[in-house]
Amino acid sequence: MSAPRAVDLDAAGGVAPSDAVRAAMAGAAGLWAYETGGHDAAARTEDAVEAARADVAALIGADPADVVFTSSPAESRVTAVRGLRDASPGLGSHAVASALEHPAVTWALRRAEAGGNPWTACDVRADGLLDPAAVGAAVRDDTALVCVHHGQEDVGAVNDVAALVAAARDRRPEARVHVDACATAGLVPVDVAAWDADAVSLGGPALGCPGGVAALWVRPGARLVPLVGGTLQQDGRRAGSLNVPGVAGMGAAAREAREGMGDDARRRTALAQRLWAGLDALGDVRLNGPPVARRIPGNVQASVGGVTGETLAVTLAAHGVAVSPGSACSALAGKASPVLEAMGVEAPWSLGSVLFTVGPRATEDDVDEALARIADVVGRLRAQSLSRP
Image (cartoon, rainbow, N blue to C red):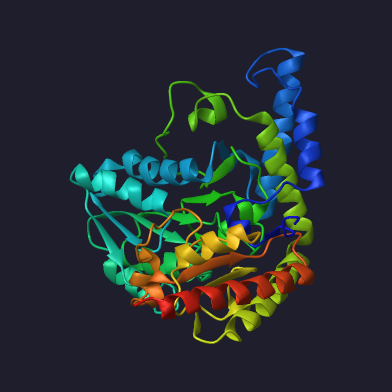
């Protein structure tokens, strides 16, 4: 018997590069010289990097000079968290973030806390959104850094970043602000000028980026201590040679996203609504986060009664359906989702979550085929659970 046709509903875990991205990467594969050299080969590399920088900047309404390329979204986030704070030690020792930030952000904050720099996790709403009033209330007289996210990649909640930043600045104008837009840039409009932030992280599956590349926008005039230093690449904000094919691919992905964002977002949202309707029809299923129409396009995180999320994800993988067990960035190993716990979701729902994310090339047939297999798998798992003594 042949294996079932693979259905990918795990776009949050990676997206296959488009033809345009592949072509850009292939074209840059022969650019071997460092862009800082003074010869023709170096100039060709520099031209490719700067063209990509301009495309990324155009996506977010920025000046290309303010875009710094990094090796990954995690590096972008940690560079912002540590770099903004270390650049202004006289501002204070305290930081504010939510419990829904990416693990790379909370890791950097915990490392700083171990060195005597505390941070406060502000409260979140039951739908996964951040309340500007809660962010403002968490800011203190010694707050040096505030970290917020545009889109929460696990439950799909999209925040009003301008309102969050305004609340923080009303309380302490001097505080530096980092915004994580890695889950949204390319799917949801990002305007860094309107946000009034000091740094914004970009890149990842939402943008259709290849692996090994991401970016950080840094506000003109903002001081940033580089995470990787010692040389003067990218104006001293990130030392080391670049992954030039990856950078070229990110530029192509940004250009594609800017040209087709609205259509792609509407298509993914429609498919996500179709997916959620089918999941809801199974009965005893709960949507975590805001309504599908108001989420990151394509994001559906649901808890299935009577089944753990990890078991469901693994079993679906064996049936050719790719999903994530609650979070795209961690294997929860039977533990309750910390994101859902912060939102007030209790067991067993917090243990039964699965993240479905519709990608750029998913179809209605893919969703319908996945739903048929999901219904079969959930039925079997629930029957097994009931049969146990």
